[in-house]
Length: 351
Ligand code: SF4
Image (cartoon, rainbow, N blue to C red; front, side, top):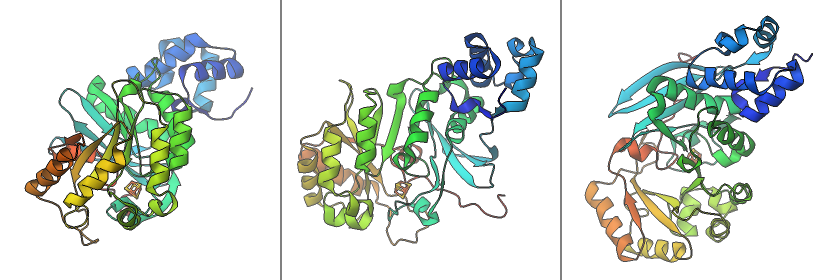
């Protein structure tokens, strides 16, 4: 009998059933009971009656099970937005955010500790990259949100700390687990993965053939010259390459690519920029999420636009034929583009 850790939060129902069979000669019945305990009843799986009725299985699970997604060490609420700070097994901390939307709650999850993409307007970028999150650490953020807010948490957006496609395998497995009907049962059309523009990751994602998965791209600049400055990834993956990858991305009939555009006054908000965006997006089924820059530490010299500046740029875009979605609340802006979520660097106090 193996004693490898059994990472419950990293497995889908069929995978868990297979593992229980391989390890302990059990299967679907106990897998379903464990999934229900963890994801629906907020229980330690050892407390599931189906597990308790088998002393040998309970003992083996007590020895092997690994369900450590980290510990919530702080939860703060403002403007209806709740931020969770989670300390991980190695002392690193990550932030997740629960946001009220019109009819439901959205949880915005982190995928890495830090980020190596270096976007100019982003607080997480200042940390540099520290490590990828494990599948359980990603899924655990959704579990935490559900435990606090219940089934109203229906949308999951991968827009917290980190570049999701830079942690591709773990993010994809986390999506499989989160959407498993025996577990959290989040509909695939309610899952959004955001990227700063890693074309290879976008193509790999397309290869999964998940047409209901939503893809968001942090565009933020209408041309290579400006995007090279704001988003260094553009020097490696210029707009032409990015657009080609997006063009090949499968979309459901009622879906569109979401292009986040963080408006920075005097930098990317001219009428000519709106015209360039229209030309860029013309071949795609895409819409722009227009978001006011959220000055976090204020160290990069950019300022927040006022409402009139955002409205004016929105009109330029609409006049150029671009479908624009303007989010009105600070909280919802946070779930519209990565880099708009204030990350908290691990500190001695936090550890
Ligand atoms: S904006 Fe997103 S991709 Fe860019 S550095 Fe920040 S977390 Fe990374």
